[in-house]
Image (cartoon, rainbow, N blue to C red):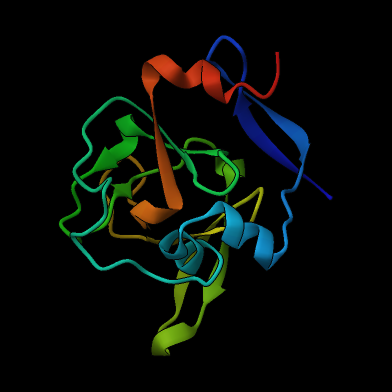
Length: 159
């Protein structure tokens, strides 16, 4: 299986969309790769407690990638303080990189956001965000890894 996503090249530029293989692993493989908290959130669709995530107050310049497969998901320039207790973004780094599906758990109807490449649970998207999109991508810190701007070439998947 393949998915069309945007990735970084060796010059630190976001390119694509490119047809790349989906990342599929067994539960045992995910458990070996991730911390128990990361596994519970990304593979079990859990939610970290508000105001406890390590990336909530991160103000550095860079990119937030999937903790499971390192697909670029959000840019620091699109992050804002929503006051909700979770890192929030008004858009994804590339529409192709974040998948959505309806979540009917906990007696609510919400739009779940997932990594398009590995289907890791990220959080939810709401329509109460700031301009220019009006969206609020509410994301668990445990589902993300932050890569500083000067290290983007480390994410290179293509020339």
